[in-house]
Image (spheres, rainbow, N blue to C red):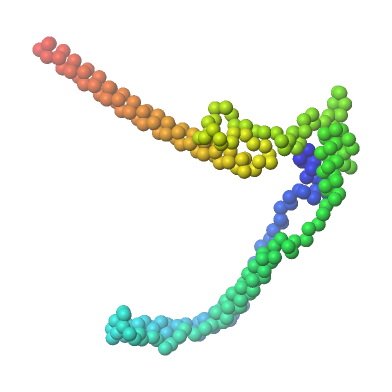
Length: 257
């Protein structure tokens, strides 16, 4: 019935994976055009590269003079007056950073208004079909269009128990008898409405599972250690048997002499 529900209202509830667009193909170009394109894009960097090298050397020299004359904690510090010149690549990066900043501000504004800006659209046809499907499977009444009733030897087959479709809200679930809570006043059962009690029981069962798993791991380590000790004792026993056999052979040889 779950699969039937997903196909209602023209498969409205079925998840459809997003189809990704293929990567753009490589563009063919000639040797000369490739070199021209590289120089055109890198010229702004190449023309300032000597200035960058000189600025780095000059600033390093200024730092050396500052440490030599004033030390690391002097009242004055020598700074190089030459700054690294900007390139077209820097300007392009600044434009991209500004675009990203505006996009982030727009996203934050959308999230701040969420979910008030979400257009909620009711689906009366979908909910009507779900209702017909659930009730039809329960009492054999009319099903949505495109769905047929399952018939057997004794008539239309329906769900005999409502809990197979919708859980009984007043039905209680209880801990098995062998589980012992720390205090007698702690809950041992809950229905579907008692969410806090269900969370408490879930936390208790999680702690019990962790404790049991830890005990199992402890027993596994104990068995492993016992197996290792057993193997060591067996090796010692084999060594003692070999020593006894060697002593017996030596004694027999001495008697013959």
